[in-house]
Length: 332
Image (cartoon, rainbow, N blue to C red; front, side, top):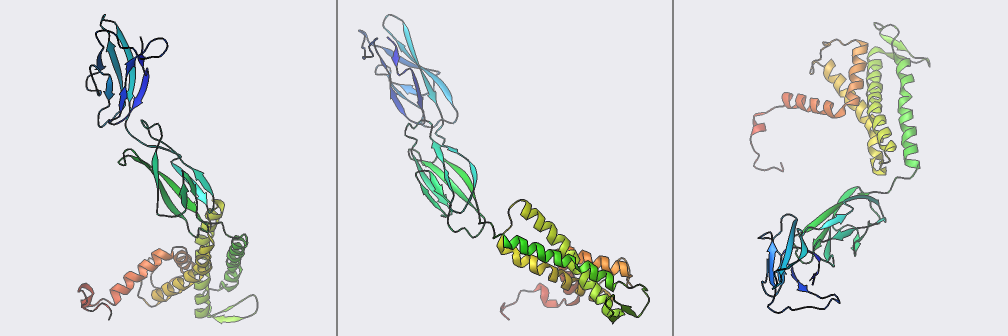
């Protein structure tokens, strides 16, 4: 007379009725009754005479238990009980989607044959229906969404998956146009060479197109060109990385277009600060042509650090006693 069911999986607080059956599967109640017990002790409780097994109210780790039925003649029949934590298993755990794409999420709740879950999407971007997530259309920016499956029989148990939403790739003309623009910035090398003084001590520089410019004007032009070329080096490296990884966004076009101009402007400001004696460098006050162009190129390449240095200079020159005091009227 075997015990039925032979194998059962239960979770927190669930119950299962066990019984003895004959060869045909019909319940059997032997004379003298059956003594029911559980091994190991503490792995749930069972009614000694009825055979109703109840799992512990909180299962923290998987436990294998045995339900034992002792017959009046001393023979023993057994059944296996697998006690599992009420943890939600969600597959997949991380996906990447573009606008309008879909992804099916499968949630499994051990101990719940129905695998009943409630879905939650945070932030509320896109739609979720019966485990099928649809990315929003349009999706104007990259963002991350968390899809959570919450158990219906115990809302304390849940599992979360990450959905990386990627914006629509830019029109092909955007990277081509940016490439052409960066290539045009690089062509400033020829202008740099044409303005490079053959005689550094000369008061005038004659360009290859026949124009003659004064020494100071020539230095200013060299600073502007080197600042733009330094920014080109930084921008071109960024452009290649993003295009190669297929993560370029059309909204970044303004940055690529203005960055060489920003680099040139910062290089000019640095040059004026050095020539005016407000900013000291390792090369001293009188910079040679190589030091001048090197500093200008580095300022253009590292615009953020250059801006921070200028902010320190401004704070030192224009520091007042009120700097450390809170203003009563912050508007004025």
